[in-house]
Length: 97
Image (tube, rainbow, N blue to C red; front, side, top):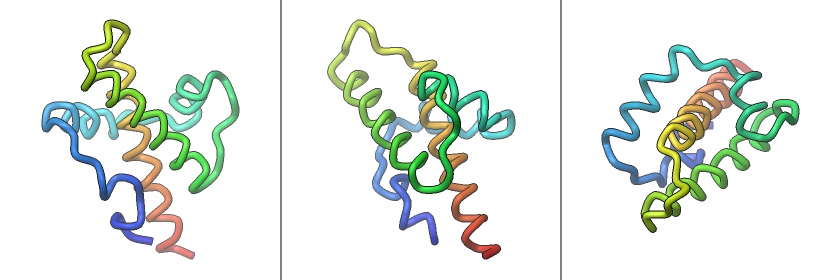
């Protein structure tokens, strides 16, 4: 699997948002982040988590673009950070296998 095979390959987001998400990668805690983002459910393996994160991030981006009053930049950064980290984890896992 390569980056082109992940939902990240098609994302076009503001540079500052991507930079903030990249900054969060060093402190990414999979269990804590996925539990928070998925409402307490256990972290899913592989592509299931990646697909669900992509959907969640798309929702945040739609809210951002529409100017929704309930949009949370912090939640969006967390979702994008998790999406990046999970894509990296999946790529590394597939490379080792």
